[in-house]
Amino acid sequence: MKKKIIRFFLFAFFLLPHSPFPIPHSLLPTPHSPLPTPHSPLFAEPTNYTYNYDFWNEQVSSPDAYRVSAYILGEGLGIGNFRDPQGLFIRENRVYVCDSGNNRIILLEIAQSGEYNLAAAVSSVMIDGRESPFNNPMDIFESREGFIYIADTNNQRILKLDPQWNYIASILKPDDESIGASTEFLPVNLVVDYANRLFVQARNINKGLMEFDSRGTFSGYMGANKVYVSVVDYVWKLISTQAQKARMDLFIPTEYSNLCLDRDGFVYVTNSSGQTEPVRRLNAMGQDILIRNGYEDPVGDLAFGNAGGISGRSRFIDVAALDNDSYACFDRTRGRIFIYDFQGNLLYAFGGVGNREGCFLQPVALANMGYSLFALDSRTAALTRFDLTAYGLKINKALEEYQAGRYESSAAVWEDVLKMNGNYDLAYIGIGRAALRQGEYQKAMKYYKLKHYREGYGKAFQLYRKQWMEENLWKILLVLAIIIVVPPIVKLVVKIGREIRET
Image (cartoon, rainbow, N blue to C red):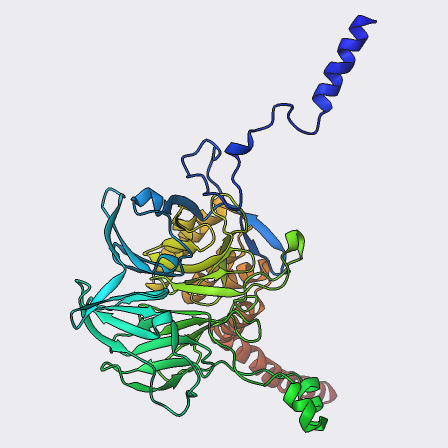
């Protein structure tokens, strides 16, 4: 009987759904406590859930393209915790963080050894001999000449400083009839292009990006969002009374959520409203020139539910343009980073919402240093760095080889990618694209067909048909000649033979 009781308790012990020795609450991260560092014992093997979408818009998991390599907190820099940081900018090895809640700008310099050194912590500037403190600075930009531009939001100004943080000029609310007298000038994001034109995204301004010339003079708006109106709303507004119309929402453009400058001087912008294209690439005329040749447009998640109280489509809060013309979009809804190539194909997506490495609670800004990505979270007040894995390096190498015109080399790298991930649709398409450029149209058709890439298959088939016609034209002409010439000759021979027999 005693043995049976012991066996019963042992059996019940192993059936317990959780460990009888729980982890102390002090070791578990909470929404209001700093996340553990990547070297914490809670992170045995750093990894993030990485995925893509196939032709059927179903998620397909893949090897990690990026891994967390650094987790930066203000406390670790010896300056106290960041507080509600909002802005992020990177130039060469310099990382600027707008520590908005603390009304200061933090400048980090990354040494060749990989150390993050505090270079400056600036909270004010001297203007005409008087100290002028920042008030909720939201964004910062360093021009190619080294000038520093700060969106000092609650002071309703944009500051221009020299590389030593000395004051040069202020850009204030433009005296323009398009801006109402009661409208405050609240700049939140800005970039400076190669012609030293300043593009500003300001709160409560929905006419597009505000444009200032190199002297700081307001010159107009650029690239306003399109307004999409459903047929039902339009008809209903036509038949409504004036009182009803006054209570309706106006058909007006939405504001951009962020912007960045790519290596060619074009401006990428994001829109988190969900009412228009989530990401656009604007030329100097404000026209959208973003290429959208993927299975679907770059909109983030294609399939989503409402688990964990999170619902709705992806809403891009920021964008970073990489050196190979791919671009990364930061999703505020689910804390994910989506990276697209120059044709609009989704390369990979990773991240999520949570209190763990590689996830975010309130994403606000994204920037890149080469292919490394830096993501800023305002709620955890932390800056996370992601670096490419061997898998991610292969994918970017294949894109670089293709852009450089080395199609055979590009196809070889894509073959290596397939060895690492046989479900990666873009590798098949990449091999087909390289084969198409090399004139191997049948091979291109084969790889395009494998992944249902209809547009590529149609183009390859058209070129293959043309090539086949050129190579076999003489055969076609010979057959036609035989069809045209042989019957009359046979008929003539038969006729002559009949006449000979009759004589």
